[in-house]
Length: 106
Image 1: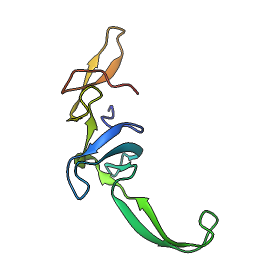
Image 2 (image 1 turned 180 degrees about the horizontal axis):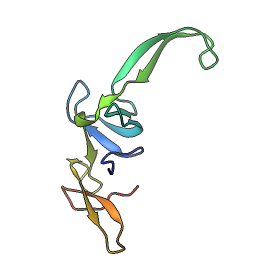
Image 3 (image 1 turned 60 degrees about the vertical axis):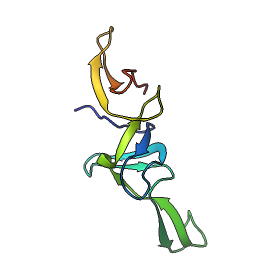
Image 4 (image 1 turned 120 degrees about the horizontal axis):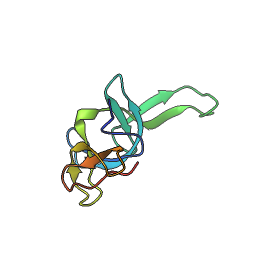
């Protein structure tokens, strides 16, 4: 099955507390049907001192969002769009923005 939303895609949040915000997909959690979007759905975590954070303390980080709450950003219009698939002239299956019909670069 081809993925509609992939790592490094730019998406727009269409539901939830961060509705309207956009960002780059940092990680796709396929089995949980969730995505982690840069700068969106920030949560605070209390952490003990470790190698990465020598002093510990309260750290802000992105929490996963359900994939149904995000939509791909149309490369042509900049608005949220659905994703379709088609075969291009070279016989390769590519993702297409339903709104404008533009091929989505990977």
